[in-house]
Image (cartoon, rainbow over all chains, first blue to last red; front, side):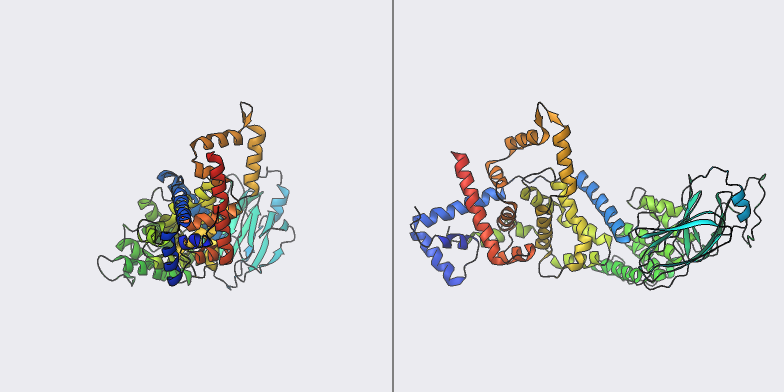
Length: 361
Length: 202
């Protein structure tokens, strides 16, 4: 049946594998040879049958959902965290996170263990490959240390701890749990006090922490701020050396004076009034690289300028989001809060909205 | 008949001409994804999601897993973008990643789900798999039914060449195999496909 010895050439011709002279020769042969013509026709019809194969694509709504889920999962994978506040440490920052758990009421605390231990945790997240944690415990402290995967967890039931965390780069999380709260350190130095099986106060010296108390939204506490439990008036006030800050339920945003509308002074690379795609792209890229370089101040200004000048741009949402994150990384929680509110005002159902709501609190 | 069909296809309405006109924008986006820019991942998704879904649907013969696999392709970009070496345009590169996922989709989760379906969900004495197979059989054309019988590695190579319009060299790079192997797989796929089609037609 296969009589023609040039039949092999037909597929090569079909696939475009023949060069000039060979192709011309094969094409001439097709004119003359009926068998090879049939073969060529068979290949062509197979080819068009394949191109007509049904290939269902999910509808647009479904594709949107996939897109959202994709970006959420990729985001979690990139930052390595699933919690709302992501503040990536700059590499090679030697961060000393000193965590003092003032058990001013240390003795008192161990005495009153009868209080049902409402689970609460203090998470100090200190990602670093070489994470060193030095812990100095008060004599009466009831605590333990575990390493769980990439997390170093300090569980403090009573007493006080002085914790120092040294980080080299992205590494282990350091998580401090108290009976009723969880504190995630996104800064460097802070202090936690526990009494009566409850977190009494959290004071931050440098950087920031996130405090998650049971049944309450998480809150961020920045450098110089303190959170303290509001005591029912009947309970004896803790005797601890609570220093300057009053026991406010919410950390006083001392460092938060800059409203989001002010960074107009920002020099931005946006040149013309109606920036062409290229200019907008460059402006966004410039802001992005400032962000990546850790120049969060510049990045925040540039993202602001971008989102103002390109309000209709698809990246405006990202710009608003990244601006809030940049402020968060600077420790300017007030600005971060305002920026997060800006984001929410324009993207009430944006996919960063849950995260921004946490930051906006 | 005398013209090279691939050349004419590429010039007219072939899949190649449907590619975005700015490969540099794609390359830029891949670099930004590698640097951790989520917005760039969104850009790549918007430009290529339908093409990837279509390719995966064909390459898996319309399997119910196709959307999951397509999603995995984009999810894996945040890590594979770093190893993008620029030898391929974005679309052939994406198809290479998609092919990898198609060929390696015997993932534990899928297997477990299949197992549970077979175990638990039985309609009229038939397992879900059998029912689904019957349903798809009725709606699938002869080509799709025949294609399902071809080894996946050959099927993928054939589809990349015939449907997606990739060159032999592009397929070789995308699949990480020698060009000679690409052509052998395509040849065998065609031979087997035609044999199955001829048998079924009888």
